[in-house]
Amino acid sequence: MSLERYSRNRWIRRHETSPREISDLLAIVDRDVGQSQIPGLAPEWRFDIAYNAVLQLATAALAAAGYRSERANKHQRTLECLGFTLGIERERVLFLDTCRRKRHTAIYERVGAISDSEADEMVAAAEQLRKEMKEWLREKHPQLVVS
Image (cartoon, rainbow, N blue to C red; front, side, top):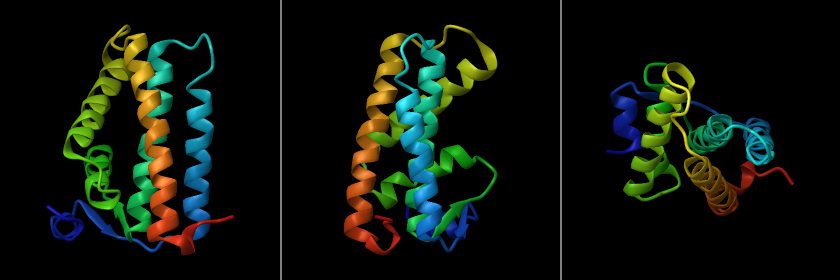
């Protein structure tokens, strides 16, 4: 698969981004990574906040590449595109998809679906992806980096 094929399948569409949009999304990421580490938060909330940081990173990467996800399966498609944008390994994309499904369970179906260690793992994933995203932007899309 590729971004072009996702576009042909109408899972994503062309989008023109701006440095401001990318900066705003990264500000959300920074806020959420920080908030996910507040002592005393339940693991479900820490996980959800860190997941949102990852989702916003994936959204920013997709926007920088010139696309935006369509509404149907938006979270899933946005996370899948990290393999095409940032080039993250398939195993990591699959991990993030598992996190997406766990988040859904924790938010909509069952209390206690997320452990402390799973929340820690999600926070670490968000921090790592944030680092990779900032490096990728500087290297591949420096025109979108706001100093």
